[in-house]
Amino acid sequence: MTRASRSAFKVVLPFFLFLVISSGVGAGSQNPFPTSLAGGTLSFRLTRTKGVFLADGGAFYSITAGEEIVLQFSASELTYVGPSWEEAKLESVLYWLNDNRQTFFKPGKSLVLRRQAGLHRFSLHGQVTINAVEDQPAGEYRGSVYITISPPK
Image (cartoon, rainbow, N blue to C red):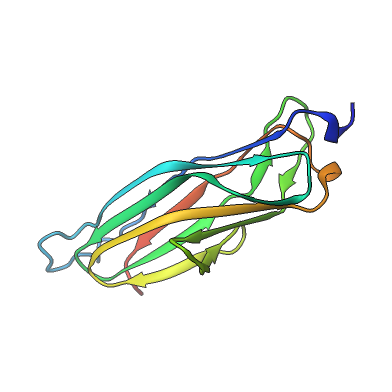
């Protein structure tokens, strides 16, 4: 059985949030710690063909900060978790915020945004590009998106 003859691809991307706050954030503020809400799942339905595949579903993130903050969006690689021992990862993965593809990040390249105090909302979108089907085992792939909140330096 060749790699391409197995079942279709399934990619699941849980949405994780890491909150990093130093003791210096919020000095003199009534609400020193940011509050946030994250949810949703991005999933990609990849067929056994080459092409560009947009994420299904949706993930969102909102944060209310009492002071200026720095947000860092990063992602792990999408790696194969199928039944065999083969190691594989999807090479061409891209994520962006809201409808602005210029605010993108991908595995190995983070997106850093500075935000003033207030409410900030983001929707997360993504795409996977398959250039050579024979290089990818069909099956399930998993990865994660991380958001780190920190004070400005």
